[in-house]
Length: 97
Image 1 (tube, rainbow, N blue to C red):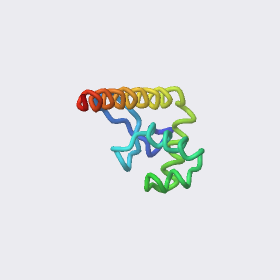
Image 2 (image 1 turned 30 degrees about the vertical axis):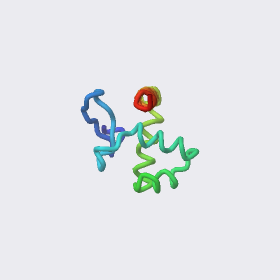
Image 3 (image 1 turned 90 degrees about the horizontal axis):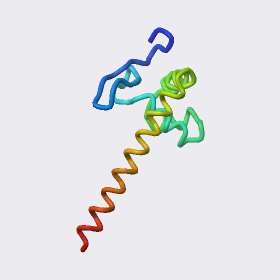
């Protein structure tokens, strides 16, 4: 945490993960995923997440040093989202028959 001020670690059902200290409900992977969705534009990402650009840059600095870890969180989240979407679709189709 000394190397990356503004980043803390939080425990949850999915394990220990890095998050923004000022917004403990916002994980670094979420900031980076949003940054990717905004073509790497820090200002746009800050606007979408309603954060100061300095916090987006802090998450980006952590990502630069621990890219594999954050990419794993992003990949896991994407997989869980797809599984949930597929389950919802199956349930919707089952309800209509």
